[in-house]
Image 1 (tube, rainbow, N blue to C red):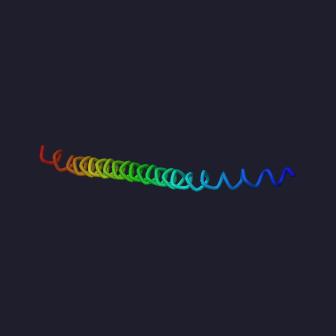
Image 2: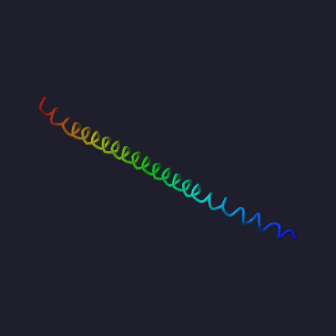
Length: 77
């Protein structure tokens, strides 16, 4: 008897479940968008680090050239 009473409840629950599908899909879509945005931010951060490393490399090259010029300057004195 309990099973028979549960069938109409289950049938009534189907439209609610179907109505919940678009919400679930939207939630997944929003989550994917959030992940995509996070990946973009990480990519931007990596690019900034790369630029900073390049800047340090250029500075080291400049120091190296300056140091290599010291003996010439000393000899010229």
